Image (cartoon, rainbow, N blue to C red):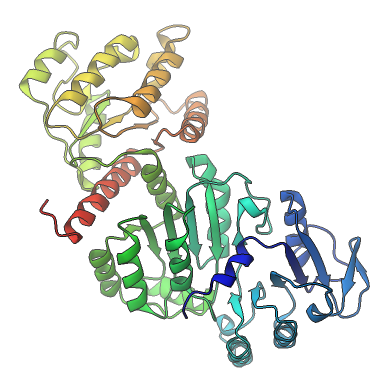
Length: 482
C-alpha cells in the first residue's frame, strides 16, 4: 500500500479507545487493562475510552457499548477481545469512520488450526474492504515516548534517535527495556505481528521519511514484498542505517516463525543477497542489535578496519588478536617508531609493544596509559582502538586510581582528537564479585553518557567491523572506489 499521512495520528493520538477490557478486570492485568495501566503510568495526556458491550463502568471509566457510540472521533483503537469477536469490532470501527486500528488479539493462522486460518482471512477481508490502517494482529502495537503510549510493561519516557520495526512483541519489550543500558533511547517502536494490512515495508517507508528517526532497527520473520523491502532499504540506508535481524533462517527457526506469526520465511541465500545489495547491517541476536546500534550512535566512521588493543597479558593478547580477526578486523603490528617510543616506559620483560599492547604498569599510572593511547592513536597503521582495562590492578594502585583510569578512558573515547573510534571492553581478569558488579555498573553508566562499552571483546570487534563495513559499502554502492 501507499503510505497514508493520516496514520500519523496513530503515533500521536489525542483520543484512544480500548476494546475488550472485562468489567471484572484489574488494572495492569493482561490485555486491555494492561494497556490502560501503561498509558496512565506514562502520563498519556489524551482521552481514553473503554468499550464493552455490556458494562457501563470499568475501572472508574464510563464504558461505551461500541466504538461508534463514542461521542468524538477516535485516533487509535486498541482491540483486545477474543479472536472470534474481532470481525464485529472491525465492522464497528468502519461504521465509526475510525481507520487506525491496533489488533493486539492473537489466535489466527499462527495457531495452525483451520478455524484460526479462516478467521484470519475474514479479518483481512474486512480490514482491507474498510480501508483500515491495521497493525497486527498478534502484536504489541506502538511505543512512542513523546506521545506517552506504549506496551504492557512501563517503558522509558525518554526519546532518542533510534526507531524499530519488530515482528515480535517479546523482542520489542526486551529492546525497549534493555536498550537504555546501552545508551539507546527510541523515537518510535512498532511491533506488527502477523502484519495483515500494514507490513514491515509500510513501516519502513514511514520511518524512512520520519525526521526524528536517525537509525532504523528491524526484526523480521517473513516479508510479503521482498522487492519493495530491498528497494526501501537501498534508498534509506545511505541516510539512515538499517540494522536488520532476520529470524527463521534455520530449519528449526523457520518452523518456530510459522507458529509464532504465521510467517513464510525465505532461503538464506536470498537474504544474504539482500544484505549484499542494500548494505543493511546484519545482526543475529538482540544483544548484537543493541551493541551495533550503540556503536552507530556513539562512534564516528572509521577510515579502515585496523585496530589497536590496549590491555595486558600474553594469553589475553593472543585471544584479542584472534577475536578481532574472526570478526573481520585487522590487528597490525605498530610501526617501529611507535614501538620504540613505547619501549621508553614499557619494560621488554613480560610485556609487548607490538599489538595488542601488553603492559600492566599503565593501570597503576594514568599518565602512562595516556602516553600509550596517544602513541597508538597517532600510529598511521591504526584506525581504531579498544581499551581492555585491568580493573584489579588499578584498584591495587591506591585510592582514586581506578576512577582516574576509567575517567581517562571515557574522556578519550568521547573527545580524542585523532578522529579514530575508541571503545572500552570490561573483560574479567579475576572473576571476583566486586569486579563483575563494577564492570556491569560502568558499562551501563558510561553507555548512557555516549561511550561505547562492551561486555566482550568479540562484541566490540563485531560492532566496530559492522560500523566500518556499513560506511565502506555505502561508498561502494554510491560508485566510489574504496
